[in-house]
Image (cartoon, rainbow, N blue to C red; front, side, top):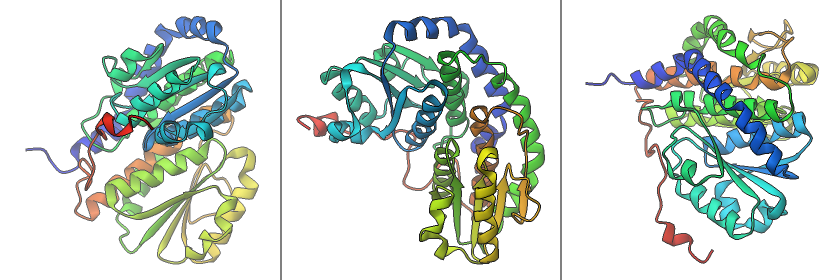
Length: 354
């Protein structure tokens, strides 16, 4: 009989080894990525996904905009499907990058069909199953085969697909993969630094709500951390841009709140100021990649001399552990969150004529 939470726990901790495998596999077809990209040369890119992969799309769009200068945006698959005139500007010169762990999510598959019907330039798929419908019907595909999961909530699949996005962006921007190849060992060090704290904070059931703050590349990470906390532990959680948190949401910052800041080195003065204010309001605070001594109750710093675009994947695993530990403390099973399934499958016929 399976032990409650065993798959989630193993999948979170396996990420350094899985990342090495995923990055190694990308190296095998990096030349093909370059070749296919040179054929396309799109003027804009639209990233789509559902749930976790929509938040991954947010990170991907910010990375591509920053590294390549190519106009990039993110949209839920459902918005491209139901409101294409809002989600999509010029389909004929747009590369659609559809991200799906399973490659079978109905909304994403239907959104791809809608994109093609509008004359879209090309579809690239990113996922974990090479034989899935999305991968087989994409014009090009990037697959994280080593990241398969038994748990419903995405952990290593999310971070592994994010690494593929980073490698893809770095290849287009001609930056190389050297810094990315350092990430598995950096994550091992992150686990050493944060595992005890993730466990201790996860068991603080007096904390009723959690806020995850991130800007730039880290905004999508904050949203994904929020989603993991909701899925696994059924905890009221929200994700915000750092400075946006002052515009209303900080009214919820008190002794029953945990505020976690995913600090960016380039903007740390502004972001740490927000964290300091939340601490003064009585919230428990945790700054990840923060260096200011009086910023937060808990602080974890990692190597700031790495390019900022390489770092987003490092923020998430400690927060996945936080969600796992909170779920376990509440007597829940993070492997099978309430009301959820690994894939959202709908009758495609309901979208006919949309």
